[in-house]
Amino acid sequence: MLVREASRRTTGMSHFAVQIMGGIALFEGGIAEMQTGEGKTLTAVLPAFLRALPGKGCHIVTVNDYLAKRDAEEMGPIYKALGLTVGCIQTDDPPFQRKIAYAQDITYGTAKEMGFDFLRDRLKKGASAGNRSPKDLFGDGDNEQEALVQRDLNFALVDEADSILIDEARTPLIIGVTMQHDKAALSLYDWSEKATVHLNSNKDFVYDPKKRFAYLTDAGCRTLLMTEKPSELDSVDTERIHKHVEQALTARHAFQLNRDYVIAEDKIVIVDESTGRMMDGRTWQDGLHQAMEAKEEIPITDITGQAARITVQNYFRQYRHLAGMTGTAVQARREFRKTYQMPVTPIPTNKPCIREGFPTKIFGSLEGKQAAIIEEVKRLQEKQCAILIGTPSVTASESLAREMKKQGIESQVLNAKYHEQEADIISNAGEATRVTIATNMAGRGTDILLGDTVRSSGGLHVLATEMHSSTRIDRQLIGRSARQGDPGCYQFFLSLEDELLRCLEPEKLQRIQKRASADKNGQLASSWISFFKKTQRFLEKSHITQRKHLLRAEKHRGDLHKKMGLDPYLELTES
Image (cartoon, rainbow, N blue to C red; front, side, top):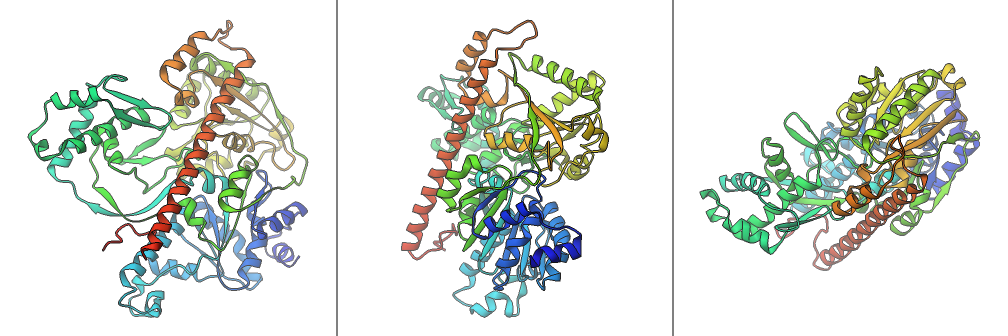
């Protein structure tokens, strides 16, 4: 009640009973599943206050710098009224500012920044511990730049926990050592890309869509052996050549521009599959990133060796206490419990949810699906509704926007290319007749506020143009509508050319497409929904298995390093 009263006096907001329930679940070290618009930001203040009281530090983790800064500023007056200090980590902050922020009772920041600070501190310890005292390392010495910035990892409260702890679990945070390319390496990347054009699928190489990797066959190796090479490759061994050709094949067949990555200022920027956001500073490893650059004919960046690394999953397992909140956690409750020892507690909504779902429409072709979506948009605009259209990729969002423009429908596009305008686009998405086309990001962390006209005409209508690789991502999109008792509805539009189905063997997918029998409008029977759900479950199980294997491998590696007396997070341990 102390925090609730401090909040009322400083911000004018009082916690609802369900927010207090969420705060209790978070303080006890679990995942609180709270629907969109239920006030997770304010709820986080409750456990943060209690965990910060011992003075050991409390980290509140968000998905981007904007939300970290916004939440720190909006919740800061509450903490200050309670006698606590607040800090915030931003990407461009120098070490001395980071040290000050971490020294506060409560620190807001992103998983990426906090994870990299953890690794940088491990490197400083590894490089300096033998010659310097702990007092110097923690910043009481003369060189403040070399001081460790983080305190012990005491408590972390993770916002959008499913996105960070599950979807990004396998993402490695790597501090690299740049190694410049010689002429032979640059020539190898260029030649490998050109060589892929002359290789035949299923004869010279096999592409596995489940693993997203291409393998050379014996016939392919013989073809490469007979292929003319530049003189710079005379000194390059055959095994290395084969490896880079396989990476070039993977780049060509597994990754698609404006779906898996975008090009910004002549640089490849990876797009997060689960959120649709750009992952600045992240690169593919083992030469794959350079293969992608050769494919797109942009300058080849220097390869990065690993000095220190940790996965997002393993980083958060280092905390003494861990909690998380999200709108979609129940489907992953077994993984949360097994990996992080965190139970999932569904929290009821403050007001009854009156969201309405309409039957899924399935089409044989992408063209037929887009035509049906445009007709539905026109119908909803006549009713003065606000419309949010969810797409799986940058390409899909821009393609649909172009088709709508041909039909005289103006729309706002929110994808990885326009992430800087995210808050502005979402703030206007609740206006009457407004059409917003968004990738998975869909403004997570920001509310779509409805005008009176929209509320009286049925609220926000969510049109999902595909099923995603996880039911949780579908729920995240659906959850944008009908918040806090508002009206709203959703409907799925699917086709046999959807990106979800690219995990299937091309020949198998072609047989399925030929077998499909559509009506005069190109629509298939509703029974086809089971095929999509089966494919989605396959991808979910595949991703769960990959995360399990990664966790097992990391544990084995960590145990091995500890037996040898080495730091498990430093790669250059032999030095």
